[in-house]
Length: 184
Image (cartoon, rainbow, N blue to C red; front, side, top):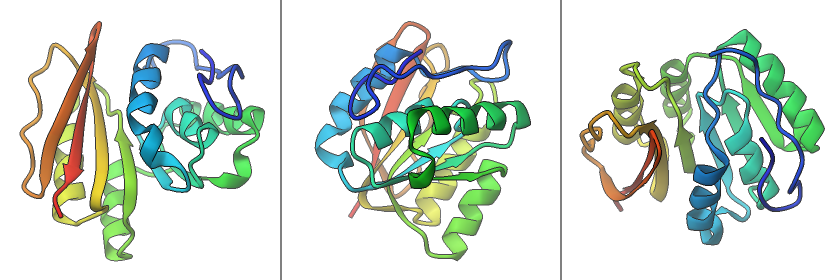
């Protein structure tokens, strides 16, 4: 697995052995960042369930001003730190070792908002609906901002929470990206 575009293009991204994480495929990252290209420059990117950090590192490589990586698994965190060092983006990154829903509630209390949020929860967990609902209800996503959810293509699309508009879906193999925009 490698960084696909931008400043760190071609740099290798490490992944833990086993099933600790399920990194987003190169193809889906390429499609995602082709869609986000006009909106990423200078923005803060929130990478939830960050795993290896591949998506947030790609965002930094393509011009995001900063990225916040939220991950609670210790093995994944160790790899994430190594990947940030290898890519040269450690100074523009904040790593938060915390459960995602707890982090989102804390961000809402602090009135933090993000222009771009990527969520890649374990496919079989119920976290996707809960996290999307918190993002919508607590207005963690800035007006007009995008939230991108990666899910199994075999699982039905999540119900769209009030305050978010479903913009697009991209499928590849067993994965799908659902893209939402916060209504203004």
